[in-house]
Each structure stands twice: as C-alpha cells, then as structure tokens.
View 1 (cartoon, rainbow, N blue to C red):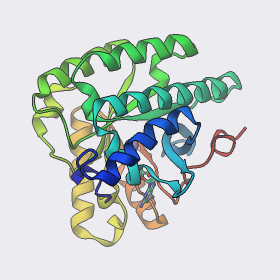
View 2: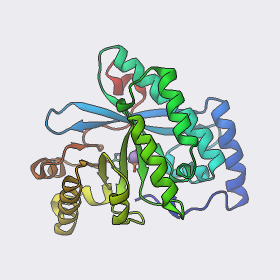
View 3: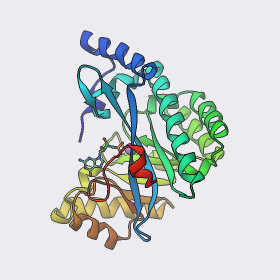
Length: 263
Ligand code: G
Ligand code: MN
C-alpha cells in the first residue's frame, strides 16, 4: 500500500514548491502516461489499459503517482492534471481503436473532483473531441478521501454513468469503505486492492477477503477485477474463483504506449 491518502495537500514548504513545479510540468511536457493492461480472464486478452501518470522531473528523476499525486488533491491542481491525462489517454485509445484494437482505457479520478459538475463537462467535451464512444472509457474512483457530503458525489457519478462512461471502484477494501456507497452508486466494476490479491494464494485471510469482495460485487451486478497480481499462484486462485479480469506485474507492467498498444 502506498501512503498517498495520508498526505495532505502541500502541507510543507517543500510540498508547496513541488506543487508549483507540478503545475508547470503540465505545460512543460514533463508528464507522461504509461499504460498497464487489464486482462480478461476468460479470453486472456487485454480488455483495457489503465493510464498511469509519471513525472519526468528535471532534478528528481522519474516520479511515480504515489510520489506526487498527493499534491494534486487540491481541486485546482487535480483539474489541471486530470484534463491533461484524459486528453492524452483518449487520444491514445482512439489510436488503438482506429487500428482495429478494441481495448478501452481507464483513467484515475480523484474523489475531490466529485464535488461539482466540472468532471461531467470535461468528460462530455473530451469524448466528443476524440470521437470515442463513452463505453470505451472507465473512470476509476478510489475508495478513500471522498467529499464530506457524498450526496453530490453520488449525483455526479449518476450523470457520468448516464453519459455511458463506466465507473470502477478502485482500491476496494482499503479506504474509508462504506457499504452504503455500493447501494448509492451504480458501479460497473469493483477493483479489489492489491494488498489482498498479492499473496492471496498463501494467506487464508486474504483469500477469504478476495472471495467475500468478489461475491459481494457479483451479487450487486458488478464485474470484479483483481489488481496487484504478481505471481502465478495468485492468478490461478482468482481464475478459479471466477473473477472477471486481473491486472498486475505478472500480467503486464505499465509501459509507454507503443508497447502496451501492441502497435
Ligand atoms: O490503485 P491503482 O490501481 O490506481 O494503482 C496503480 C499503481 O499500482 C501504479 O502505480 C502501478 O505501477 C502499481 N501496480 C500495478 N500493478 C502492480 C503490482 O502487481 N504490484 C504492485 N506492488 N504495484 C502494482
Ligand atoms: Mn487505479
């Protein structure tokens, strides 16, 4: 587990400086997207690719999302980065599809963007601009850090879904999980957190948690995805359990586009 959810936005002078650099990074082409496949366990084919942002920082080297996305928890910064990520990811996805590869794309959306209708407007605009059918796009919303009044988030997600965009509940089991949320939002998919999946074959408790989460999601009509599959034994276990899809280093690492797209 990374600890990004424990960090508050720009709480130290160093963080504040880095936040300014991050805003600048968007303009200066220092952000890049890598794509990690989500494999359909029945067909063995990549059904979609999760777009993961990397920051090629001029002094600090390549930073992973966990190193800097806590800075993007203020809505201004989050909006700037999300606009860029969505634009790049949809452009790539349009490319794959134009070349006959029907995979979708998944983009992570911070829960701080669920407080108003900015996200809905952005999604509508970008889908039109890239001429992509909404169902090719999944937004992954992490469980932690939801706004204090979740009713607005529910309303925003209902409109997102009405657009036809798929919604995935990310990192399931680690955040401030509320089962009530599963009742209020029609998630298309539940992604079981890697902390339960990695090593599940060797841990009775993790195996039970994966089975329980999967059964719950299934009963509520969601697809079930395991993230963090790092070993063959874990893949065999979740395949046997009947999960729909899986993601993890054993199946494919995040890669720059040409490789992930197989083009
Ligand atoms: O929670 P979310 O799905 O957004 O997490 C994505 C992050 O998880 C990325 O930074 C990615 O590099 C990392 N990741 C992807 N697959 C694995 C894996 O099999 N093991 C571990 N430890 N991390 C992974
Ligand atoms: Mn994710």
